[in-house]
Length: 280
Image (cartoon, rainbow, N blue to C red):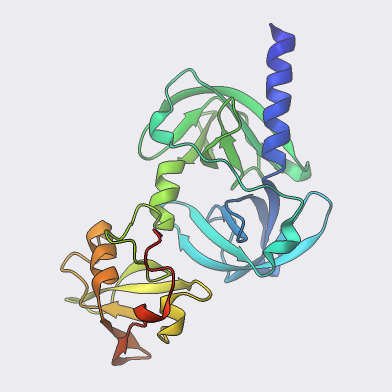
């Protein structure tokens, strides 16, 4: 039985190493781990690993690539990076993600990362409990594991390792990562603007949605929207960015935005895109 378990953990470890890299903050202020999240060069890590506007991604063979910060949430301890040339990450495989809401106590989980400079180290343990805030497991983590994957017995990522408390590992649940990335926001008719948004306040009485990433070739790019634009007059609860906002953006013919202190109206180029019928 022990031999079978060792073999199973080794298989999962190999899969996780194929999705995991080192992340070095700009200016040499620290390093941790990261997880390749998709084929477009999106890398997930912890906010406390990346404190600047860019980082360096280092793959297992020591090759380094520049990545820019596209989203950061210090409260949830999450940061998303975009590698400039994702084709250069061909030796890595995007993570297979499982909804953390299905995780139950007692499950075997495996953590991968680069603790104390040991590249590709893995450790296993059992889930103690899982809630909307944390996946908590008796997995041994050390400095350098931060930002790496916590996965189930099949190698599916259920969380992003964040910290240690009372000897237990705490990972940000994959469901919280999905919310952070906005993948829970779907437009009802399939139209998508092609942006990542972060709720902000532009005044005491006015809230908005700040554009923190624009997809290449998207409606947003063709319409002339820019990083740093703040979308105004969306819905009354804009600071609670939930699906109704995505629905309203998908139905809009134009958007009122705040750019460099000036209010502008941008007409959206929906008709120019062949992707209007495809979900986000």
